[in-house]
Image 1 (tube, rainbow, N blue to C red):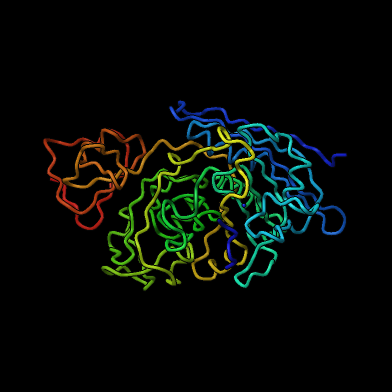
Image 2 (cartoon, rainbow, N blue to C red):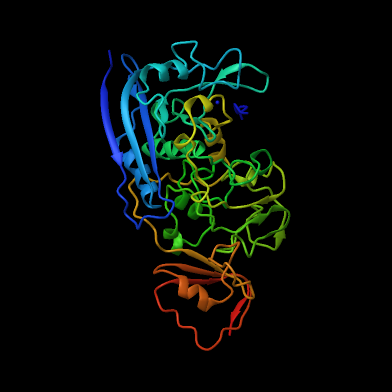
Length: 423
């Protein structure tokens, strides 16, 4: 694994402005996000373009629209192709601010960025590769899919090491959403410290997790047996997490309880037993590697956590920020060698999901219950009242003493893991 950088006459011009129409009732926190996107084009031998298609952009636009947000992506200039975007030779923390070479991000931004000095805009380059620093202090080409400032305005998508040197349509769309997520303050491991938690949390159903960035959330969760197939429609392929999943204590994993949705063979022994200790997130979806720290890994309501600093901070204040380098082609190959093959989904504009995963725990406090695993409903009747059509109720082990007759008044699924008794 590479050492992440951490603790920052026009050619072909095609302008595509994708604006999300609000397909759901606007939320109180509805916001408008704006990205100017330029892309590199290689001509001559080995010609290829890093330009994302309108369909790929629409996939990400729809992802935000389903949460009541408007995302504007202005696909703008075709840039000269550079095989490697240079890192500041005197400061390895300075990638986005370095402009000392024509093939540096800063030089390209100063030439091609149309919204310099304007608040509320982010700048993205779809390029080939970028330069990084390895553990020995050497500057080397990165195989990373991208790099983004944390709570900043700059990010890149770099698929030079992926399929056809440009990645698949899903690679490009999902990585655009992933890198932009870093600008909005999201990391790879929910609210945890990635050094200890790892980048591939299985219970963070988000394209921010290495487990799902290039595999899709719904496809990845089903393929890895983390959710019953019947209710896979509770998840979209491309999404940030809504924070509904249960925490996992790696020192005492209950395999029959699993994700509290379905039993899981957490230690990869070939069968479900009892309690096991196992690291789940070091190698992403290939958790059978079991090479990291044991701890607690928690889902995060990422949609409630995003913030756009460009709306209230000046460009001058967004210099040399912490950065997140993202999954490499080599890491993808390693992950796939350690697990069953999971086919990548297609990049498609997905319908919004109104059905919910609702967790129920007998005797839980009713105060503030909203059906998330951390604030479950105490009764089946209460969960039923809150459910929408197609929702799924997941009952923790226990005895549910319901008052009177509970009528499930809408089409939904109900799962009782281990030994849940309703009477």
